[in-house]
Image 1 (cartoon, rainbow, N blue to C red):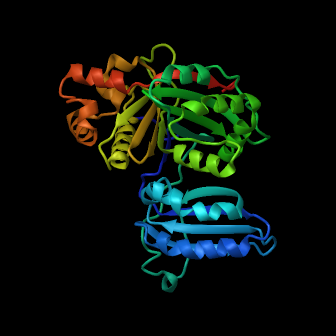
Image 2 (cartoon, rainbow, N blue to C red; image 1 turned 30 degrees about the vertical axis):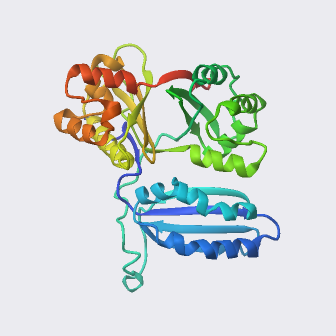
Length: 375
């Protein structure tokens, strides 16, 4: 069994109640306009499944600083909503009022309140059972599609840029960026020590990165104008592919061979099954992490709607054990996995040959993998 002191485990799927904090810096003079737009939206938000309550607050020191806190029964319903096209359209009227935003998400670990103050609404959802042990790294991904036929040109452009300076500020540093392609879909995973938002802004301001982004603009399936803040905000909101689960065993195990290899696996989920599929993979990765022979050094699952990507760092060749590499635990785990995958894309998965074929297709093409010095 992997010692708890070595196990790193972070998950949006533990069922604990979620507190979301949204910090907003409003444009000068836009306070009343923002309040009116919020009043139009709050009833829509209240009807979203899993939503418990929210509060709108204004700073007593700076009238341009506002705060929205919301409480949810658990993380999955919030993530399903905040990453939906419905949410993108719903918050559009607020954009003209807002200069800057920052979103923070916390699971509720402990709370103190009198029994009489506990309402049925606030009792929904359970508390996080134990503090999580992290590794100081924030993981995120972006995904978008390019026009069919342009894949090789886009890959050349994306692999040819100069890496930006790793140090963002005294507290934040870029650790690793890995970029993959699956057909015409691009997935860029990012690992940051410190403040993810600060790191993303730092990268976006670098001339070499900006030049690459401009160069791939003509090939994108979704148009964007990086000089238009509204257009850029909508594009990157839709491109966000959040990490919903991460587990790492730490250290090396007996029998490890060679260097750790990084792969990104794309799982074609059936319509509406993306989150259920991500939960299955997360649960099976957690169970497998207790096995000393498990060849996965770390696994991060990214999910948005029906897009599910599992980033794995392996101590053994990917094809040595296709079932293990795919994250399936035995016949039962494979049977459930099979039911959640799009059969037209995944195939039958009823033989070793079919498993190997699906794994080879799921293994995304690595375009570039860059680590900061010392990472």
